[in-house]
Image (tube, rainbow over all chains, first blue to last red; front, side, top):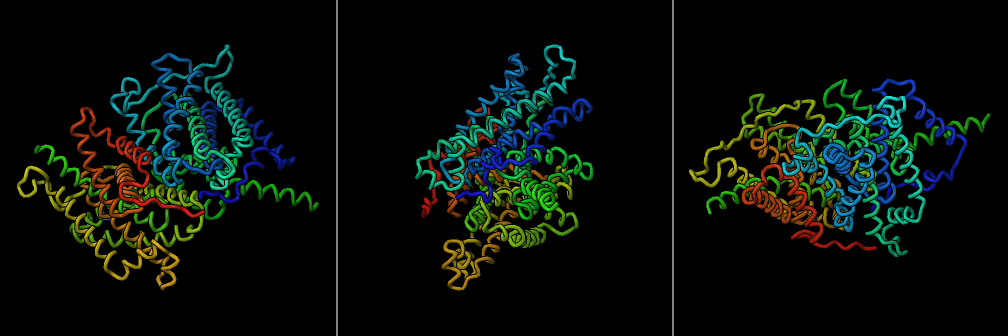
Length: 336
Length: 292
């Protein structure tokens, strides 16, 4: 039985537990995200773009784990499939990069759905095992010489950075940033809606008690596979966006370490809490930079220690901190 | 015909390493119902410990024994310090714990011994075994050491008091507690044994694949494939599954044109998916029925 304690998605996702504090902080974050490229350098803009890309990928994992109670260690594989789909289509098919995004989503959805089908009928351990194998095998799959004419083998593929359309007077980096921001906000809204819909409630019923859910008529295998497919599709979009922003795909960029990072992002952000995805993403973008500047190879250890810290000390991650802050501020206001 | 025999023997040799990994995964799985994703990294770390001991001038076999002892202690310590407190936590928390362990061990190995590839000596040499053209002496050594290890485990788990207590603690923890077995320590002992078996596998495969921090990543996937093929609920099945996977891998590499080294992991992946699809309990596993 895979139950995740203390994660009630409905309240956070639909915003029923509204508070002025919550709304103001959301608006502040949004304002910051919209306005900051005006003041930032291209490199910082690029970094924040990647932060949004990873946040989207973590969101996808959150839908799977927080929503339906399953976990995947193979998110890096779907990220890679999305990235390669986009890069190959742009380089060899001459397809417009914007069009590659829905194609990447569709490809990942189908692969995720098919991959999930055998493993999802079984317990969570088997899914973890199968996805672990998928993540470990993915770099080697991408290097296969059968695909080399398209994928570029070990060397990978270099793509060109798209310019801003309609002659907008902004740099390509800024344009990509706004594109990523718009898409990740749309995906966020769609994910929040999904989780509060009939489908989302069915998924959460499975998460909380599989047997009870099936007794109520929820088609367990269908919803589990669906959750896996949707999660893979969103991860694919994130991967494609990442490939467009980085302008480069190579097999060794998508190893199991990326799966670890995304998993850490979810755990740090708080499992099942969608806004936590962005906090988790900030962690996995900036912590390695700091750690690697101290010692090469340190970031893995820091990631590991952080995961342990979260599961032992603050099991609900950033959500717990956010709620604590909220309680403190409101408590002061109440006392005054 | 000679090529076939040759490839099957070579397959049994690498398969015995997969069998060790599969066995250590299954031992921990039976004890705590979770898969140890860090098993490969722990084995790599053990191999590096052995390498370091040899760098300090200790001969191979004393280093081997010392490493097995150190790995045993480390396995027990990990269980006591990390997974005992998580015993009643959710599956997700446990998976997170294993991922954390994976990241930490991998990173510490890399930081301590850096990422360059190192040569690991073989105590058996690489000449032809008994002047036969079929198998070289290191491959024969891998099969031999694994055989001795399995015989030892068979006797230990089947005929000693501690071994029987371990099996009792794993199969029916409540009843075992009632007859006075310290179940918690038995689980820790299982961790120690699994960690030692992994260390042996790491030290035997290191001369073949060369020593570097990520060396066991792919081998663990093969171990998983072997464990799934044999059945996660059957240690003997896991051993046989591991050997079968090794033979299968070698035969495909030899007889399927174009399928060289680069298809190794995809084959393991396909094998895992096929077994899960058509025979999820493995060849020798039991179907576990859960009470509502």
